[in-house]
Structure formats: structure tokens, C-alpha cells
Image 1 (tube, protein in one colour):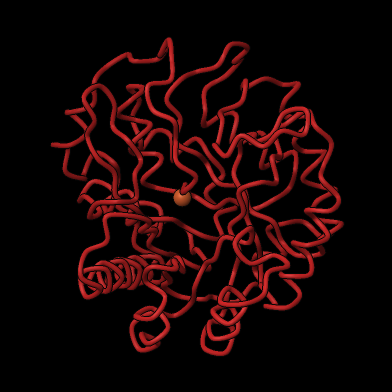
Image 2 (cartoon, helix red, strand yellow; image 1 turned 180 degrees about the horizontal axis):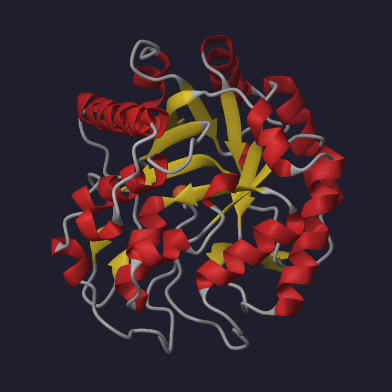
Length: 321
Ligand SMILES: [Fe+2]
């Protein structure tokens, strides 16, 4: 496998996409004029027939498709699940996905799948394990692989570094791409009291192939990554900050629950497109991108300081990151 940054150069620019969700499938599949591509959860389609297969066929005939998996469990001490990888490869070959992704987390232990995206001990040992597994995954599947930064609500024991250092080291050692979720960066910055712009400055943004944009909600104690609300301005600001610095090959909206009128979703897709176009102009103009200090500060000031050691998980993260 060649160096990932060379691989990225050869990837198609898909434009602005949306997550394919069963509840929105009819409207989504009729919106080719507003949506460029779709992301699907492979576990919902691997080896399945009936309505799932029909939806997949319709989507495949109209849109470029990529997958965003849940059960690779790249950070687990379990070995890679060869049956899962085989089914995933078949699906990726069927839809001819230009890349595929999963989360930097673990979802299984001793072969038991927990249906949640669980944070890892951010250690050198974990980095070595994950990098080795990512290389095997890329070799087995034969397509570029991206890891997504998750939202997390506790720092598990054994952390030797912060989340940005961990993500950076995993990506560099594994030589893979990033699926950067700017909402997750924002939610984590509020829950754990760090500067989201500093986080972005500390990760290898040039490895970003795909970006997730989503909404969240304020819980009683924590900000919860729900994908069930409108995207807030500070998340759009983070998106612009990233795209003024690097090109992504696909940016998309994740909306998984509490669905509004479909036009509202399309308007958010339009907004992402406008930001992407404006940022591309900055990149191509040769002008310096905006510094973080030049971006509105009002939401960043709202971040509670120093919430770094949450003792327990107050919210079981739904499988939607
Ligand atoms: Fe995400």
C-alpha cells in the first residue's frame, strides 16, 4: 500500500453528502440535485436481501457510496473478525466505494459486541496494536481506510496522552486516513474543557479525507452527541477552519434521529456546500487561512474548564457517531 497522502491525491472529490437512513431514504434518493453522495452503515446491508438490498441498489444506481462501519472494533484486543471483513469487502466491491471508515474505539471484547463506541486507553501499547490491525485491514480490503475521532464521556484508565496526540500517532503509525468529525471535536471540547482549534492544530489534518458535520444537545451535565438537532454555528466554524487549510474528498451531514422536514436537512447540506466552496476559494487564492483567534469566540468561552476526569459514563453513546 503506497503512502496514504499519495493515495489521497488519487481519490475522487465526492462533494457534499448525507448519511443514508431508512427513515429518510425516499426523500434522500430523490434529491440527486442537492446531494452528491451517500454514506451508509455497512452492518445494515452486509449479506442482506429484501428491502435493504433494494434500497442499496437504488442508492448505488444514483450516488457514489462509501461505508462507515461500527463493528470493526479496531481498538479491541480481540483479533480482527475475518468473517466480518469478508462480508465488508464484498459490500465495498459491490458498491465500488472509493474508501471506507470506522471509529477509533472498541466495540467488542472476548467476541461479545456491545453495540456502543467505547473509548480506548490512549497508550503507546494501544497505538501499536491499532496500527498493526489497520495495516491488516487495508491489505485485506484493498481500499483506503479512514478512522474517525469519536465523542467520549470519560477518560478510561491507562491514558498516557490526550485525544489529539492519540489520534495523530495512530494515523501516522497506521498510515491511514482520517474521517474528522468536527461535531465530535466540539462536543468533546465542551465536555472535557479543551480548545477545539488547538485540537485541530495538533492532528495531521492533511490526512483528512472525509468530514462529518452533525448536531448535538445539551444534557443536564454533559453535551451529548445525538445527531438529532440542527448543526450549531461553532461546528460550522470548525468545518470552515479545517477546509481553509486542507481539502477533504467528501463532507457530509449526519442526521440520525428527531428528523425535521427534509427541506431543513437539505438546507444544512446547502450550508455545508457554501462553506466548502468559500474555503476552497481561500485555499486556491494563496491567502492565509483565518487564524483561530479571528473566529468568533462566544461559544468557545462557554466551554467548562477542566472537566478531564469524568468518573463514570452518564450517557451510553448510541451507535451513530
Ligand atoms: Fe461522525
